[in-house]
Length: 364
Ligand SMILES: *Cc1c(COP(=O)(O)O)cnc(C)c1O
Image (cartoon, rainbow, N blue to C red; front, side, top):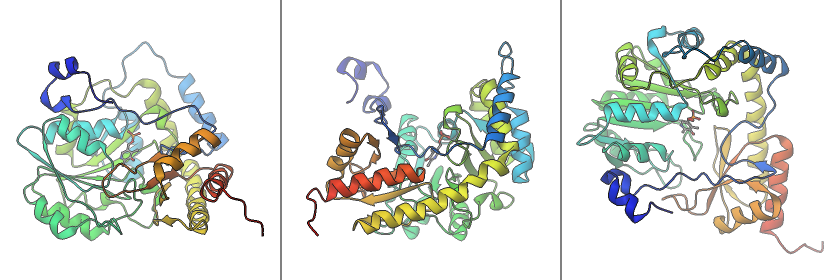
């Protein structure tokens, strides 16, 4: 549902064709639609978070740059505080980046199918979004075209592992992109923790001052509700974020909780191995139903089902299970994205799909 005629007449042209964001949330028993963590936090870490929250006064404005959290993140990643900027979720930093480096008369290179936010925010701030589609079978970026388009791009965005396809790209490709693009390269590693063998693009920061590496606490750290993301980049790019971002965007409670989680990251990240093992099991279970499932290095899998839209509706209506329907997106015909849940949640999905896809019980 788009904006009303009257609203369209009032807004800037870039806004007129946008639609109010609707992630399709409804109350349900099993929600595997948004790649959140559904695993319980280790009790010791949960206690640390609760204590940090309880000790945080609310009368003062937050530290604008969240320096305590920045220091914890810098220590973890082995960089200087001046190379870290924190945002109200990674999404806000994507917006800030496009606001600062995109805009009217400037181009943003996008590689769909991928996270839709780059395209939406890119157009919202007035940039021309140049889309170079990925290979329709493997979802590998079309490197020859990508590198050619990068040469005239003000911003290039590469997601690895990619959402919603789950695949990663080799580090030498990231480096080639940084070399080809005279503008800023955003490497979105929102799911990087689930792909331990991938190697973070942060290793390239010393050689490439135009590189921004995005991370979030929303996925592997089970903090989606707190809205905390961060970018690692050269100090000169961090200064740009410091100039365009809203000063008090990361509130005191989120700063406190996030600092506790980053300091307790060993406990938090221990669960990642469980998610990775469960991802293998879910992938196998879906393939055993005869479905096409792409290998994923994130905390979700992309699966092709006959009539995805109907399957998604039946999952929600008859089984109270929510998954993401991506079948409307170019290149994702009949695809659903299923977050890796707990073993019980994944069994619920597999069981429901078994019934939906084979409605007639066999007599054998
Ligand atoms: C979830 C996600 C983000 C950021 O999420 P926040 O909750 O805003 O931190 C960024 N990029 C991709 C590809 C994501 O899937």
